[in-house]
Length: 323
Image 1 (tube, rainbow, N blue to C red):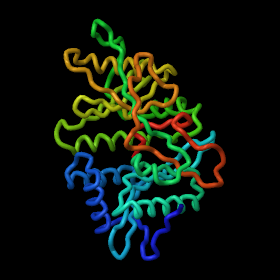
Image 2: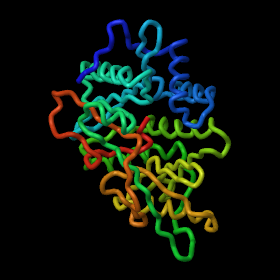
Image 3: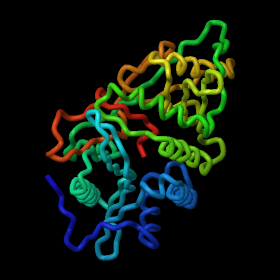
Image 4: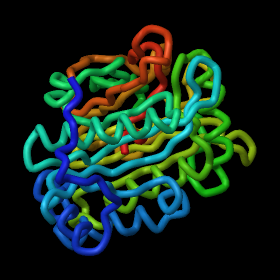
């Protein structure tokens, strides 16, 4: 059922006092561990990055001068059934009540379909996903992973270094190859990868000291990145935000994880979590648990789009892509 936007309400790109109201309401709803001022700086910094300047904007549904709902809107590109297609995404969805939030979603989805956008991604809570129509859920479970270690507690013979700007082209190429078997994936170019990694770095840097870290490591052959991992660290929990490997087995990613754990052999082993695409499990890694995620990625497609609903099995999606 489509919830129409009330006639007296309008959806607009937030600016000035409206944007300030949106940021305050969003921070109160989900502060991401930041102070109010730091949260506003985090958003402003994202919008000033080259990718954010062109592809990101903040929407607000305003009624009688009051913000009733808001969301972050992203213009993306994807590969769907082997063809490039326009993708729209909505994140940070927030409303005075669920009806207002759902009305904003419907208005934005309908506008996207009028622009011939084939796929709309909604980054929402599992609770909200249960009450809106959708054409598939492409990320809905958190995996807990265990990395096999050598009984000698040594690091594998893997050349590991911190990831750099020069590695992004190789990372983009790994993603294109890895994504070929999937029905749907984002077209992750260098600029987008730079944006999502920087976004997480900003989140860590603006928060309390030592509360959150972002680690970006490369395994290389010669001077070229052959595998990589991006890991968010909170307390003793590692979250794999994204990873990639030129080796189809993912063995270099597994070796990277082994090397990172072996840096401090006397410390308590971290809990490792993340999303992994179907068919990608490094031989050094075991899935010990799979639990429903409180945050999911839901798909909406227009009636003219044919084919079955999308699913996690048919989609390649990294946690870092949940904007």
